[in-house]
Length: 169
Image 1 (cartoon, rainbow, N blue to C red):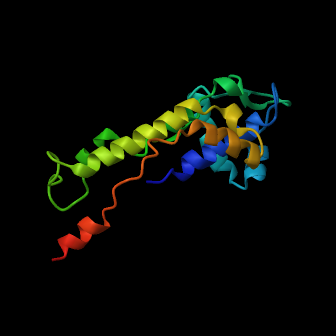
Image 2 (image 1 turned 45 degrees about the horizontal axis):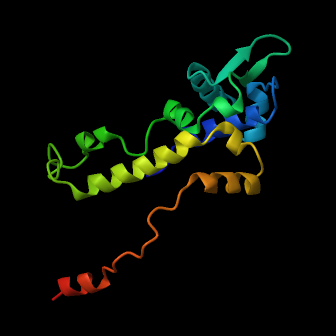
Image 3 (image 1 turned 180 degrees about the vertical axis):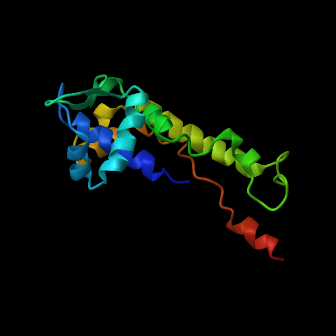
């Protein structure tokens, strides 16, 4: 499970524009230089973000791209969904790349529930994180993001070491 380059760099471009402050704008070449990306790639990312309703563009001499909403109203989960989607889509099992026509575990898959739970946790954090939460420096952002992640059940887990050693007999 990885975020795609498109999701990572798209979010970085959006953050760079957000750092310009209210009404501040950047052109595609300015974003490209700032982020170390090619102009065509930034143009593609900005187009996706504009079509997703996160950016608006202004033409002309003083033109460029600005946020279409305040940073507090831009939810990171929505941005990432617009740029690429989810880490684990429910259709994943139907897109089985194995040699058989379908996965041998389509009916009873113990792993599917794990991926679903991981996705649910990721969705919860991303749906509560706004662009505003990410506009500070790394130390500030780290503090605000850690507050969004709730530590679950803190009871110690049963050790599976003993169970695993019994399997080798």
